Structure formats: C-alpha cells, structure tokens
Amino acid sequence: MIEIKQLKYQIGTFDLEISLKLKTNEYFVLLGMTGSGKTLFLESLCGLRKINSGSVLINGMEISALSPWRRPVAYVPQDGALFTHMSVEKNIAFALSVQHQPKDYIESEVKTVARLLHIEPLLKRKIKGLSGGECQRVALARALISRPQILILDEPVSALDEYTRAQVCSELRNIQKNLRLTVIHVCHSFDEAQMVSDRIGIMQKGRIIQVGTLEDVMNKPAVLFVAQIMRHKNIFQGIAEQNNEGSVIRVNGLVFKGPAFDSDKNQNPLTFSILPWMIEAFDSEGEFSDRNIIEGEIIEENMGGAFVEYKLRSLIDIIFYISRMDQSRLKLGLGRRCQIRFSSSALYIFP
Image 1 (cartoon, rainbow, N blue to C red):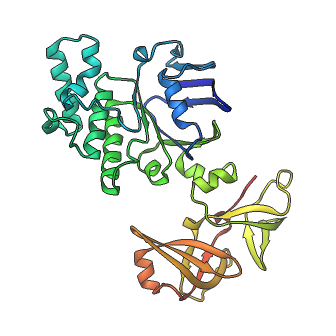
Image 2: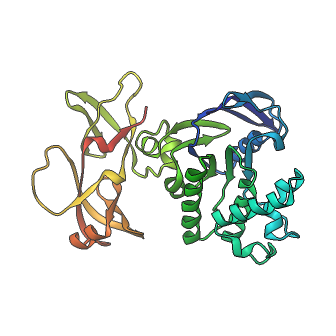
Image 3: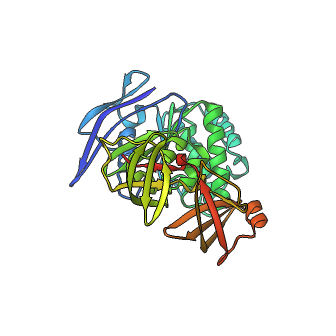
C-alpha cells in the first residue's frame, strides 16, 4: 500500500497538492495536460524535489525524509537519462556498481534483467546508435536491477512509433505482473492508459481531481475537463425535466429520454454528454420504444483501426463509432443518410 497524504510542493506560482492511495502491485496511470504538474509529482515521490509538507508511506513506512537512493523507488525519466559514454551493460549495472556489489553478482543480475527485457544482444553496444525502443528497454533494465517496490515511469513510450509503443506497453504490463511491482505511469495518451492501467487518475493544475478504473472515469467523469480527457465529444446543453422513467432532455428541437438526475445539484440548462461508444447505427424501421433515435447525414469520416468514427449532421452534430464490419453491412460513408439509436444510459448528466 502506498499512501500519499497532503503532499505539497511549490515552485514559483505553481502549487502541487496531492493525496492518493495506491494498492500494492497496482498499475496506476496518471493522465493530464502538459503543465499540470505530473513530472513535479513524480520527482517529489522520488526525493528529487524536497516537498514543503505532507507524507509518503510505503507499507506504513514514512519515506519522504529519505535520500533518493534509500527509497524503494526506481524512476525512469521521460528521456531515459542514459549515460552515452557507457555501454548498455554498464548503464544497466550502474546502481549496483555505486553500491560496490560483488562483480559476479552484478554480472548475474545484468544478464537476468537483460533477458527479461530481451536486450541480451545489446549488452556490449554503446548507447549511441540504439533505436528509441532499445533505449527505453535499457532505461527500464537500469531501473529494475535495483529490485524496487515501486517503478515510476514518466512518459515512457511517448517518443516511440505506434507499433513499438504498443509492444513496449505490453512488455511493461507483463513485467509489472511477473515482478509484482506497483507502477505509477505518467502520460497524456488515452490509448496508452487503456493498454496498461488497473486504475487511472486525472490531474489538473497540481491536483488529482478524479481516480477510478478507466471504465468508471470514462462513463462518469466528475467534471467537464475529465470528460474532455476521456474523449467525450458529444457535449451539449439542454433543458431537463424529471419523470417516472428518468428524465426528458430537450436540445435544439430534439427530445431525448435521459437518466434520473439530482435536481438539487443540477440547474437548467444543464450540461450532458451522449457517450459515442454507446451509440448504434441501424438500417431497419423497427420499433425501439426504449431508444432515442436520430436521423441525419454523415459529414465526417475518420478511419482508425477496427473502428470508424463518424459525425452525423442533424438538429445537433453527433459523433458515433462503428465497426468496419457494420460499416460495410450498412454501406455507410460521407454524404450518406443514416439512423442512429441509443438508450437513456448513453446520456451522462454532469453534476
């Protein structure tokens, strides 16, 4: 268990204040925009920055007063910070070398961690000339050789191409499970978080404003900023009325069946989102009494992997996703007319 209590750090006019609990062996991803304080937070955890107040406890042990090298924490900065004048082998061995560990032990540990990260053939090479993915693996090996309880990663795959990024993320997840590590992984990529996280946190202006599973945060964002980070693209304002079945929401001449909401906390006009991953395109004229239905013209088409993103022009412009198989079956494309449907649970009303 990692417990961070009222950790405070100030630099210039920027204030960092974090409270957070992490489970043992959890893969936690911290998302946020550039300048939100993510790296400052990591450096404070590692001891690279002296906090103004607060505490950091690992399994009940207070570590915030310990020197960086005495903390059970390994940190991989965004650029890897490899020693370019050293070989891969000496880079990996660095932490054990400065501890004056026996030579045989160092060689054995280097080979073990190099095997884990599939970089044994690189051990005698210099850092210069390695690919981005190879450098990232060397930086990880150097961090892991000290057998930390917590691995902290700052934008570990941001400089890699899409294929290598997915490969390294898969390796990170496997390493975390095999070594039973607690990982804190900072990024600003939704896709990256989706590949590795057990839980995520959203950071804004030096504060973590929401924590939960990716699904929970996606479907129930605490504030509009979180919704934007979570790719809520259908955000509208409308007039809502409670009824026995939930609510009725009116926007731009359309009437939607919506969920119940707390009328004490929500005032009209209220802000709501229609979750694009819960919208379905259809081609029949059947009765769907429990569904909201919109008809319109497709005005944008964006291909991406197994899914296509469409924007439908109606009384409101609304984005939805569809599989390539359904796209082919329904013969959807730019300029085509289309009907979409979604249940009241696809509408999320912001508190």
